[in-house]
Length: 323
Image (tube, rainbow, N blue to C red; front, side, top):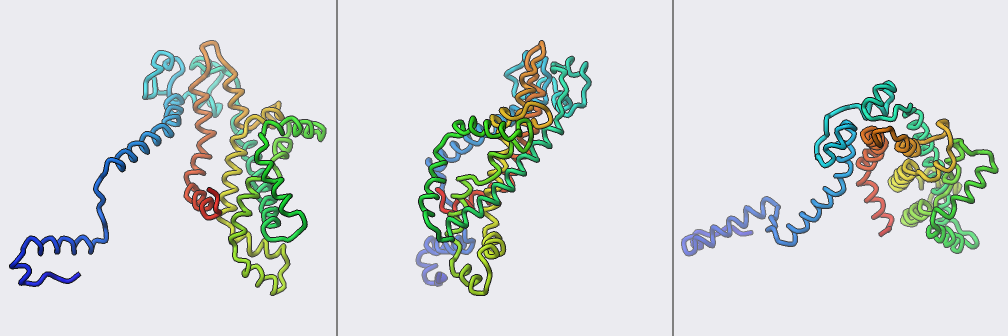
């Protein structure tokens, strides 16, 4: 922008001053938007939604840090009532039976670390196997040419419309005939292989990989298997990581299927253990402090995991063309 001349300054000082302020504004490279009613309302709505989303987690923390006896007297208090670490101590088995009963607990033993280990083992095994086989199936649907490829992929997509409740009984009968009831393998087996959503998600990304790169590797003598492991998988690290995170969270939060299969502490996962813990009601009422402490500890790894990789998940979904 041209500088104001001396003559223009003498004739119209206000114009020259306005021109100078415009120049400074352009030099900063920032444009300040005036707050409008629509923007203010949008921020208010986002703030309300944020509070609604975070409030349940805060309420769990508030209840976990309270005393059971005081909760009934001050149920509406927003702050911890009669602050106590007793709920967390009962979850980690740091209280004796007499101390737990005195603080409103049921006094039952909770093998928290066994349940946590079972959940980690089940979620990790399902994630590793399911993502691996789903990635191979997605590559076959996106790159390989074979007969009835389209109809078979259509059947996979149709399986997304089948409610999970319809598959529980056939899967249970199969697990029972295999003698895997009350075992960790019996919990993992139905989700150990391919998942329709994971195949669809990864296939959408594989279709965006330039075909010329793969053809160049094939010309150099690489096989399809080598191309998949040394070329496609490294280039697809972001969507594979996204599918892995979503699969891990789903396996970690699964409740109904592990409840059907596991009967003892040997195969009981954390979600089922929380349900059993809630059913152990002492004379004074449910052990809300202990239950909320256990729930918060069980949900904390998933919250941290999703918070760390939320941006990668959103970017991968957008890049894969899933709306």
